[in-house]
Length: 206
Length: 190
Image 1 (tube, rainbow over the protein chains, first blue to last red):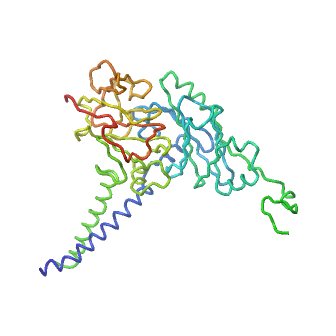
Image 2: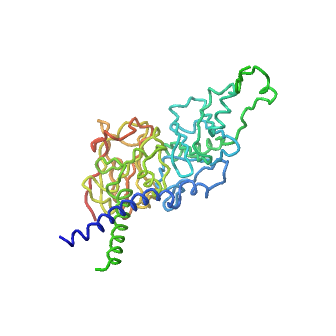
Image 3: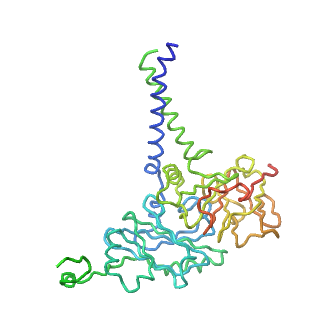
């Protein structure tokens, strides 16, 4: 009995410590993981340009667990200075554009079922940039898909279905027409901003 | 028993328990945050920005870019329907149907997640090319000798099957039953 009472504090402390180690380990895995998708894609091509990922072959694939029925193109960019425009026009019968953070978390996906025949005109913006765009919306804002990014660094991935190997060159050709470029926010001239009575951007009581 | 010895033992057991349970929860046979349906395992929250820590850890150690939650679901099978690990020395039949999706692909990968070296440059089937039975279900045969129908050569050694549903109606997987997904039955082994 005395031995049990003497051991009990150690058992409880051990279990408590095991719980803490469990939680820390699970939370630490994403930070400790090597070969994150963002770095793997960064090794294939530079930032700010569309990189067509090479088709996976046995022993070599940019991303692990590839789907050989999907051709992929990616574009990495930073919203630190300017927002980005991503334009894709129907590479195949099924395609999707997915946006990821640097750590590989998906924050936006759109598939061609939700996109008209004219293709996708996506604008990826930071919170501040999106607010500025909304302040002075361009005329064609309704044709754009506006996406607010949670972080500055964005990885865009286009997946396009290749029904058979003969279609692959056509899909790749279509990838060449993907636009991934920064765009300028429409800024109203400063004089216009200071005009009295102007309700936009911030109405002032007279 | 000295106090230091007791403390060290407690510490060692705590480290083993803590790390061991974390490993089991992230990549073991009973992963937390995963939905299991027959031989298939999926992480339904993998495509969410607010995924739980276990799903995040699983994704990070797999190195995959998950399909977005509106884009589809990825199912992995490392075992057959009776729980035996998938082995390239055996024949398998993958029989059944998939949950509704615009498109699905089934891919054979080696156990490290790369495309498997097979005699033919065919690594799987997709829904537009597969031969179906009159009731809409399908049967894929993995065997070293070619058979008519949907045939794949299995890779050498342990392997895994990936079933991806693109533009799936199913998003959570919560109500998924084993019968909604193809069964994987083992045949003869060499």
